[in-house]
Length: 84
Figure 1 (cartoon, one colour):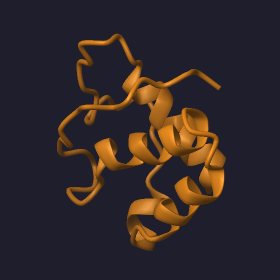
Figure 2 (cartoon, one colour):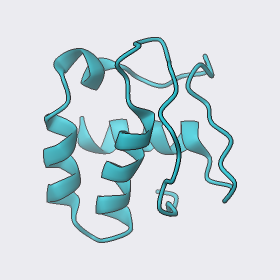
Figure 3 (cartoon, one colour):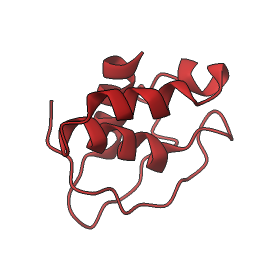
Figure 4 (cartoon, one colour):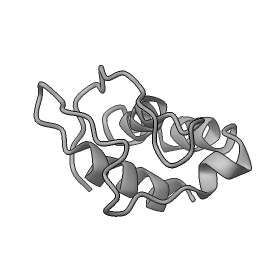
């Protein structure tokens, strides 16, 4: 799993207008950066079922340019796999 810098990114629209990529990156950071998997999973599960069902692929709709070089789409996929 890639290490994630604190994701100071704004949520952008994706396939699902309610999908919050910035929040999901924070949930991954709880698990990966702080070692608090349970907290990250708890926050992920609080998302609506529709949002939790979104799986990042190659559409690139929510790709954000991170000034710290975080590969956002890759991290989102990792979080979705980890917490689903």
